[in-house]
Image (cartoon, rainbow, N blue to C red; front, side, top):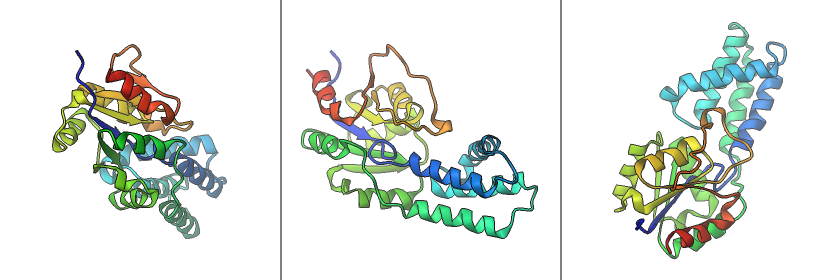
Length: 234
């Protein structure tokens, strides 16, 4: 018989609260700033390429995104980008770091319902200070039995996190919007992965779903999560 689920972990950005929406708005602002130097599609291709190069140096989050925008601006202007444009890019990054938290539908209800029944964790990647700010402002922080801010989400990462909290992967479930980060690695580790799609997905998070896998689940939103856990634990 499958092991019962006794720990449920949640991703943060675009699972519990909005995130990618603000990146897209900033990208539109960035494209407007450099409209005289590159068409939007080409500019976004260059920006994604810069982000891909820089993840190993800057990690995930707003600060790395801002530095990648500056690098892209230097590239597409062949080093002639005005200081005014650099200043506006930096201002856009600061605004993203100060943006209020906008919870996803059913996020509070889903975390609250499960927190009274089992161990509930938050596992997110990104800049430490920014993620700590979001957790504090979300009003959800006190519901979690543990908060883990990690550099990368791999099978080894999930196994280590669950072990720190006294859990085996086969008794754990990870809930998130990213197939690449929240679903595939935890299934590889031996746990359950629940995909809750967001309408926007960062280019570097795209992956194919493991259709037909016994530990892969998909929900349209978080309203059905508690019922899914109950069904799997019957």
